[in-house]
Image (cartoon, rainbow, N blue to C red):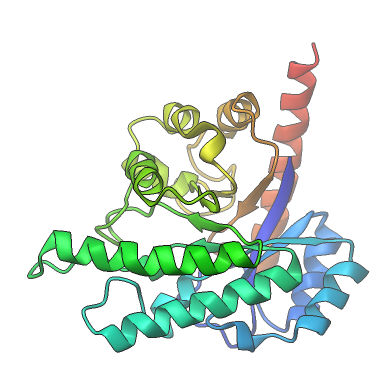
Length: 278
């Protein structure tokens, strides 16, 4: 099991849930020195980064870039799939397509989180869902042509009213029926929305292609009340052996948060491996 850290370019809004928000050369060096295996890159648009530069940096520091996250598309670019204005929806679709092209070049996949949008109270829910399915299907087909997966992330009710838990995510995957659309659970959101984190992870099974970690307070794992030993044990039994990437608040400060997360998770994963080999 590999451990990643979510980072963003220096100009990213404070609304981005990342630890390091600075020059990517600095952030990527820090991530490597701390012992992480990879980075998740939070972008507003694919054109924010230079492909050759990113490739050189992750290669030089022996890292991987498994996923490009897209929360900033919603919070900063202000476009999303369920928007009633077709021009805004098209903006979201085109942005995700550019992300897929970038992901292909970087050997990554693309997260679909808040960019899916929400269901306004005064609109017909069926019509809003259909807008989502239309946009998501178009993006999935485009991403498939580029060998890229789209990873649907259930998000808690306080951030959106659409696709809040793992069961709802699986229902969406079933209806879309796209081989390159997978599930991306986030244990912080699951702690709010899923009756049992471990049961939901078992239910998701091989639909899981990537996962976010943060503790119950969105601080580093080990700083809240989530049982990460149990969570990691269940993931291994699924079996899941990909990236667990930390997307958390930079508390008490970015460097300390990043260090606490990797130290804690390395210990828990090692202990889990030792128990499994007995």
